[in-house]
Image (cartoon, rainbow, N blue to C red; front, side, top):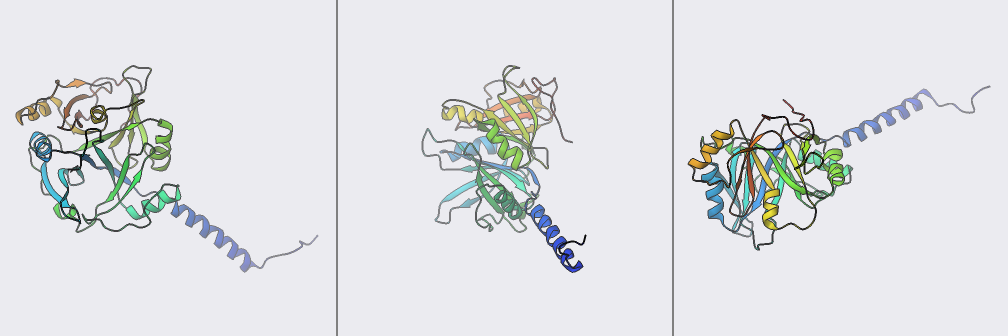
Length: 312
């Protein structure tokens, strides 16, 4: 029996070409560019002098540069950890109840492609991206807990790029911000954003007791830094939020780091201790309660609760 109809070879080729083009276009549209690591943490203060004393003198970081608001007046100052990582301080803390965390930020190699990818996954993103006041391409989105999450692409000629290799004194207690921590109330919702959409992976989870999860360490997809979920319930005071919303600075030897901050005039509330993840750590607090954690890179004891997956 003859078929009821046939297509010319050219028609078959056209259909095949269109199908392949559509599949390739969809794949290209859905591809996420690399997310390399923590770029910065933005913090609020009502006392710039005290913040400068803590981050500049106490932790030994250079105040590399600053930015003014387009309307006039200081917008923020930058303490430089390394060429790709900063602590940004905003003098905008207006009340005792205001969250000290402004935002967290991660570095990407292609901010525009990441914008398109996030849009394809249903994340609310800016309509377009253009260089900011610092000359870099960046965008701000919200995570499920309402935290501001920024993605930054360092551009040639930007404020940061022009100062690569500068403002890196040997007074720094650390040259690497290994993680930042934010509060999370719904782990499944956070995972849908950070794990399913952004590609972060669990490297460890643990708690104050072995049967409870208080912290979940989510490693960036294309680097070794991580985001720490600080699992919470109920109402939180600003001082409690300062403990939870934190940054961690990697050190090779915690005792040497302890000696350094003591020599810089800091008075930690307690000496270094080994945490539940098996790593030596030391907690320090800025004048607005935000915690800086000095942490050794590797565990010296077996971590509680779950294995720790490391990336070399």
